[in-house]
Each structure stands twice: as C-alpha cells, then as structure tokens.
Figure (cartoon, rainbow, N blue to C red):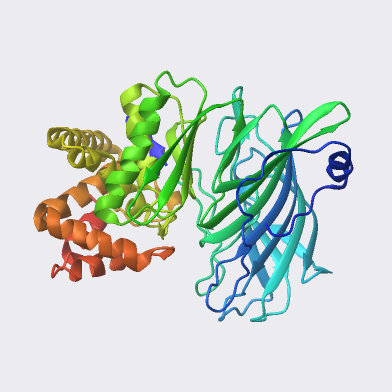
Length: 481
Ligand SMILES: [Zn+2]
C-alpha cells in the first residue's frame, strides 16, 4: 500500500448466459491462446483458483462459484482446512459474504465461520496429503465505500472478495483482521477467472485477458471476460468506465504488457511512462519484473495513495508528484510483496520499507541523485518530528509487531514506511551501491514466489560478505528511535 504521508481450460458459464450466448455471441477478442490451466503437484504446489463470477453493478453484488485445488500441508494435524474471508473484515458488520454451499472433493462439507471479525472459514475434512478440491458457492455484497473492496461513484473495487486459502505454518494462521496496514497473507497461486458484468463497464485486473464475449439478456448487454493470472498472491479487479492506455516494456528475456486504466488523470501518458520506466529500471538492478503483464488502475481509496495486488495495483487520485511516486511505490511492490512475499502482519516494514526506499531510489536510477537525497532527508525529518511529538504520550518505534499492536495509523506509517525506508537507506550507505544491489538481487532470486523473513534479508547481505544482523536488530528492536 502507499500511504499518504502526513498527511481456463474449463469454464462454467451460468445457465442464463449460456442460453443468451446461443442467441447472440459476439466474440470481440480471441487472439490469444487459452491459458493452460495448471494443477498443483509435488513439483509445483501453487494452489489453483478457478472462479466463475458475475458482478451486478446495480445491486453491487458478486455471485461466484469457486473451486480451489491445493495440496493440504504435509504437517497438517487439524480436521479442517482454513480459508480467510477478508470480505467480512472489510464490511461494517463483518457480514459481506454469504456462503451458500461448500463441497470438498465433490461431497457436501460442514463448515463454520468464526473469529471476532468473521474472517475465518473452517471447512471440516479428514487430514490427507492428496490433492483436495474445495468448491464454494457464495455471494458478496460490496460496501458502499471507495476501498479495497467496495464501490464509489466512479469505480468498484472487487479485490479480496473471494475466500482465500490461509497460510499454514505450525498450524493455520488465524491472525486478527486489523484495521491498520495490509492485513492479508497468502501464498502465490494461479487464478483462472471468468467475470460477467454490464457490457458498458471496463475491467482492470491481474493477469491476461484471454477472451471477451458479449451477449444480450432481457434487453441488456453483458460481457464475459476470461482472465488468467499465475503466481500471484492476491487477485485484483476493479471495474468502471475507464479510459485505457497500453505499452509494451521490452526486457532482455521477456516483454511486459503494461496497461493503465484511468478516470480523471490529466496526464495519463506521464503515469504510464512512470510505471513503465519503474519496471525497466528496477528490472535492470534487482532482476526482471516477475510477470508478463502489469495493470494499474486509477480508483479512489480511503486514506491511501495506492494498493498492491498480484500483477495489478490501484492508484488513488492525488497531486501529480504524489501520484507518480505512488505509481513507483506500487510497481516496486511487484518485487517486494508479490514475488518476494513477507509477513505483512508482523514484519510490515520488510516490504513497505523496501518499496518506499525504491520509490525514491528510482530518482537515483533516473539520473536525479539529489531528488533521492532530498526525499530521504524529508522522510528523516518527518519521522523525527512524529516521534518527538508522540513520545510524551507514548511512541513505540519497534518494527516487527502485529498490526493490531500499532497505536494508530500514524504510528504504523512512521514506523513501517518512514523508518523502514531509512533502515534500507542506512544499509545502502554502509555497504555501497554495488554490493547493496548485488545483495538485493540475491534476495529477489532466492525468495521469488515464496516468503522471505528479516533473516533472509540478512542472508542475502551475507553473500556479499556483510553481517547486517546487528544493524537490523538495532533498528527493529529499538523502542525509542
Ligand atoms: Zn506499500
């Protein structure tokens, strides 16, 4: 997230659209080969989500059929698998999602929705190491709020609407859904999505749109998009009456299809150019951009400059400088959050601090080193001011703690973004540019599509002969500074 500082292989169309398609089918785009849908295996354990969803833009509801295929954790001891209902955490009464039915391996299963915020979905089953199919039928009511899940005047954000397989460590993770930061954690997975909605809307989303078909029903036009997004942590979709620009970024070993969907951006070419340039420059120094596509959409967000998803990001309308920095920040998250995952619920500084550092390091890569230095000086002053104002009433500067342990959103922003960026700047100054970049390249390649910890960051610097553990310890655990 960017905080505002201070400040298919198998498709299951719904019955009615099938009848309608028989009457009138207009295939608009069928130029790309269909996705080869994968299945989890011992070699590639990524869960697979096959989601057939319809968005009703008048009722602001989603109805969906979802099948998730996954290999249960080897050390699973519970008699249930756990999904997270993030949609409930994002609605006022924690009741956005209505589960209509659940089948495990094609048989009806008992389930329970629990947790203080109704974000835990326990689905009872026998422990097994065999490939498991969990089929869910559900409806989601979108909150009336321009947020990560919700609708506003100009667009609707359909992110985190779906039940998401929880992360398993010694047991299923059941972290509370905090109202601070990004209270989400998930493994990389493959998504194959069919989205039906009013034909007048455009969808900006993770992954590649494989096909668009248009049909009539009861005198209204609808369209169905088929999407394929692989190796992403969270599926992002926003819909609205967007204008769009596209560009191909050519990297040494692949092309990245970049698209930018905007509403009121007065200089959309500048934004597309900043996104593309961030992809090029970060690919050059950290390792290539992890995905074949990257889509960014302008869509208002409450209290934040932007939000990252897998191969997708949103940007909230803002003044041009802030907006372009948010574009760089969210692009950096494709390396630090999406490809290299981390525990956002406990070590939020690891992806936010590094993405915030990258936001300004971009200027150095762009031949504007003084802008990097002045941005770091500004962050240092802002952080120092916040700490000194808050200290008399209580200020905790420790960086690795649960999201719910932050006293306020202001403290979270100061500690994870500002202090986080200053921590990376400190390491950068100490080890020098060449070795800093070599270590970060190692951190990326060694942890791509899995999870990294602070220890993994230290291990990356060890490859360059540096022991940054005492530095990390000093920054992370100092309560006062
Ligand atoms: Zn962020």
